[in-house]
View 1 (cartoon, protein in one colour):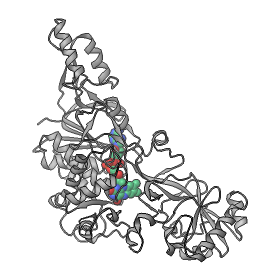
View 2: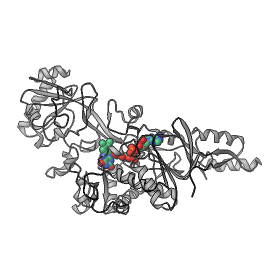
View 3: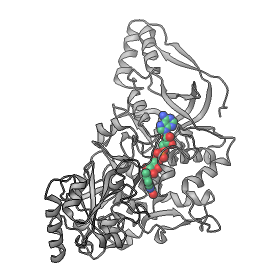
Length: 558
Ligand SMILES: Cc1cc2nc3c(=O)[nH]c(=O)nc-3n(C[C@H](O)[C@H](O)[C@H](O)COP(=O)(O)OP(=O)(O)OC[C@H]3O[C@@H](n4cnc5c(N)ncnc54)[C@H](O)[C@@H]3O)c2cc1C
């Protein structure tokens, strides 16, 4: 096994001057790799032989600043799981974990997440469910889903072996997250027996039952026990993947630390766990069309890895897939934000209208709707994890850049603003109130007469007991009739992106030619295996599953 700190030379073999310039370009990420054994490589070899060229010469003698067996980029759940695997299964292999944030728990989404982990006691049932969620979306092949399903089945035993213990987390049939029911699409499975094998685990206390402990904190504590094999660096941004231009193999990374550029060799492989592009407004606009959407977390996730992998020839998949959008609350000045998944409308405390004063979607739903077994959930659920039921199909919910949650005094008394602020919501700058709808509409700036007409129609449907416009649950049909009236400002938000480089069942990053890019792996939401409909807990779960797979591939122990 290699040691940190030694300076190594990497001899990259090329053929003549043409190869030299290709190598130079490749190291700066500008040249497409020529995959080993590809038609292009064979043609080049044949040409060299025919011209009587000399044997390939060493054209690059990179002096590495550091050398490791595995380099992990990103220290969220995926990177941490990969590093834990190296530490516990690597037989002394050494690993470098780099994160551009300033916390070892990562600067991305993981530490802000609810901590639910999608798991199963039956990998076959999980695979059936994953295939149903993927549906007709052609991007993710069955073998990748199978690898994920097997990983889901491994989570409990893996956490146990790391010391989680039976008391440390709730088994999924005893899940403590009341808002998360899993499977989130129960109708996609045939029997209750199947459904009972799939759900979310959640760490719900320390060994003494002393409260919530995030799985990321637990895994990070495990890493702290392995300082000899795992080096963790924060404030380090990976800026380049170093690639052998002849073979396409990834040899290491270049990262920036304190204004200095450091090169780190990765003899076993580089695992990209650098999250999505939640905080890259241009990428969001390009791929998601998300003007005005509020990223919830993922502060450091700016899509760096997507650019780095594109430079070394990676193919991308389902760039448009995200966990979102939801309507959350934003203060009038845009300074304050509260996510609430339209819990208020699910409780029937008001309605949501757009800037035209009209309702525009089935605004009840959220995670809890799977408990409403009296309804046919295929047609009655409003939305699940950002997917919206439209026309009987589940698709991403695009939302206007600004909406208004409108309710009356009865809605206020029922708690419509309780989760936004404990103070007077109008005085606190979250919206407006007025004694009449006309006055309220003027304050908000809605077109004349529209809000009044919308509310009149809504109240009529409440009397009739059926929302024939958007089919909200009958239990949520409460009139907006008692002054004063309120309008709280809403903006769309989302949790995380799922697009990125194509991943194989072995967690390899796949190139544009369909072949894996040697020694380049990925895990987590970066090129997630979630391509379409999503189940709660699925991102942390895949981070753990593919983090382990990637590390084992790097170590050659898969
Ligand atoms: C509010 C919220 C709640 C959620 N709840 C759940 C839940 O309960 N269950 C679930 O499964 N999912 C949940 N999710 C989604 C889930 O949190 C993420 O999808 C998951 O944490 C992603 O993990 P990751 O390791 O792939 O990426 P992240 O945790 O986002 O980590 C990526 C890391 O890469 C680093 N990085 C980026 N670029 C570079 C670079 N160039 N160099 C070095 N480092 C870099 C970042 O700093 C970051 O630390 C939630 C998300 C949110 C926002």
